[in-house]
Length: 403
Image (cartoon, rainbow, N blue to C red; front, top):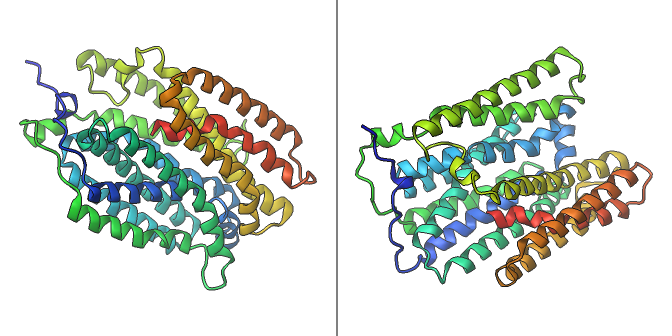
């Protein structure tokens, strides 16, 4: 006899009479912190290299947070379905707190990376909880404004992360560690607000906990996480650390291909047995317009990350500029990004022709990337990289809007 699906596939609870201001405040605090910690390490990477060495690990300073955030998205979604969302939210903020503390007190670069990864896990769950709370409790009239403000606050956190990190490095009374410690009072405030204001979810599923846990596609989650990490290792270490023809490089790419194939097969077999319970939303993928959206969002995020994390290294190692000077030279890239997010978020509901914006954003991104790649050199004018890079933002705002 087929068991009924868990709460994630049952009818959602009826929305309450709006969402409380305390809950909104808590969500927005964690939202700003999520954006802040994407960019707060961008301009302190040279100082981390000076402190710990291992230049080959520098890409993982930024990658570890976003990688952990992405790799645990499906897990975060599932545990929200199984457990009381209020406690999941509070624990996720505590996980973020632990990760920030670990990164701040780190004695080597591996511990910094581990702390950033823990922060990414906590941030991923926080993000899913925030979206779920708005979906469950916000009224139809509240939702557009709440989601719009959430995207804007994430963008604000993103834009202040670099300058704040740079300011701590340049200040004689602080060090790069304060780029992580600054999270702690805000996360502590978020925990207190969550304990006081954040509600639980109305119980709509009478299945015992054991059955709800059985509904989680644990193997799919493990394979997704493994596939993501293997790809990141292969793409990051091939070339700078391993020669492309070396045994470690071939081995890691082969392992990635095998695990990826196993994940695809497992998801398809699981879909045949129990549709709707997979890590990959196969039922949604049948909609032709969804896959291009995911691909475009992924490409937009990749182009943004390259500029955000590698341009400071270019300015530091080829120009000898300090953290604050790096930040100033990135502003022509970051500020148009924020403005574009706000403009598109305001105009899209009225225009309702997102396809044209995608095409325009993709064309501008490609053109500016080609210009940057062909002109970037140690002796190039300092204003050239920032000026060409700033035009990439027309498409990248979709990463924020997708959240």
